[in-house]
Image (cartoon, rainbow, N blue to C red; front, side):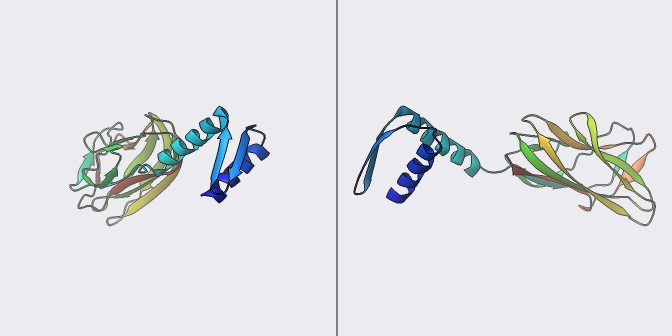
Length: 181
């Protein structure tokens, strides 16, 4: 403990952020400075925030879903992981619980030999688009890294006015994770 406290004190004093009157007696370091106390409390709060669970979710479609409008949001209903409850399966929207850099992945599988036009939106704007080409149960994955502010929304939506069907049976998925704050 003495080594950590002395090292922290040395670094703080070296950086010129704190001028403190300190004494070191065997195992006890005593400093008389309110600024040092504030810095230590901020460091503890920062550590506590970093120790809190990271938002992460993984959800898939259980039933085939026909997308009818270009505004249709896919609602991935089988939620397997939803730490911090950022993903809402009733709306299909992930809402950022805190600021940070997030990674999102979406795999869509077309039903039969259909094609599917889709996109990942940040709030109400296109961020990344995807396209599943015609073929026998073809699929496509998109992966995006996005800087989000608290309460920003991310979701997958249809981007075509023609009806297209996404395969269920847990073969189409949407996931996201906080990478860093």
